[in-house]
Image (cartoon, rainbow, N blue to C red; front, side, top):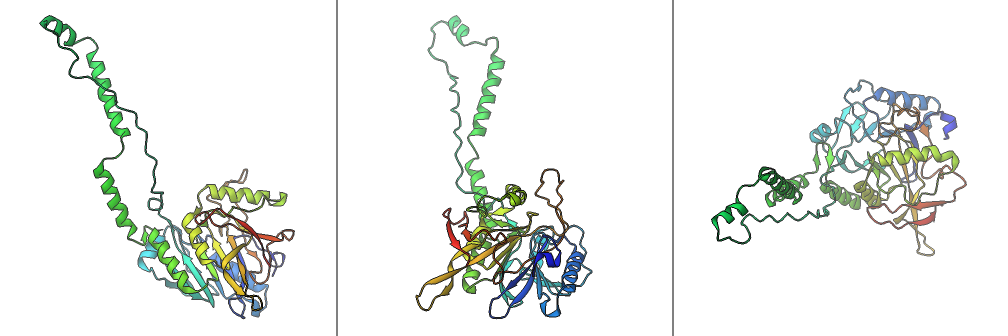
Length: 391
């Protein structure tokens, strides 16, 4: 399948995966934002141009699936599975942490986990990171200025009553000086930082939150720990679904060619806007999936594949481990908007549509002139990088 054949854009990406000998054809979709009807339209449009044998088996949606105004009256022609980071994420996670069938052919995967869907081993994570709990614990201490030493007791005593009155009695400007001293002392107390009671209360509050898996639709460090355990037990992941991008995804990516410059600018803008997450980088490094789909950035981007370090096939003749690669795809929103990206002169609007490509077993990265792939070594794990062959 080729993009020119289906005449579609960057909101939905078609993939062909081969977890076994049988090929699995799926669609990856970006931010739906409640418009399920448009998903159905795209699927129908693509199926109309394909033989029945080439029809897709499932749609996987990432990013903001929910919205304030939801249109879920349509019945998708094929099963749709989604994670969510939109307005309804908190309610979905609270009501159905293990997932549920929202309506016919529409399935919420759940808060996090690993499941077999359409013959694929799928790892998934809903929501966004909880900012307070993932904030670095080591905080730089403020170098508070030393309090002004004020002598309230007097220096040397005078034997003369008049001398004492003259030296220590009320003087002109005393009120102004007293107010200045009080203000300086208050400022010094502010610079001194929180009290012990305040710090203790904060520690207890953070500890209580850390014992939860999700808070108002945001995942916690405990969620990441549990998901890593499930990934380890799964014995291999074909597809990883997250709303956020992995932190460090631009590391070791070669400088953009002229025809890629505009897209790379949008990618960098999305990263600066905060669509990346260090915990997602940890999950990607732990899972080493064949595909990693993520949304929320509003930009369609196929990163150069990065090479696995532990997952691959052992060559019988040599005993060498031949590692595979992960193809990371960031998906645009279905309505074409870029809420986090505002390219110059485009007023936050992107191209609407669906993009198609063959997946892991069928197609190399789009720029044919590039023969190598790069492993980013997500910043959560290491900054080291190395070049490899996509094979």
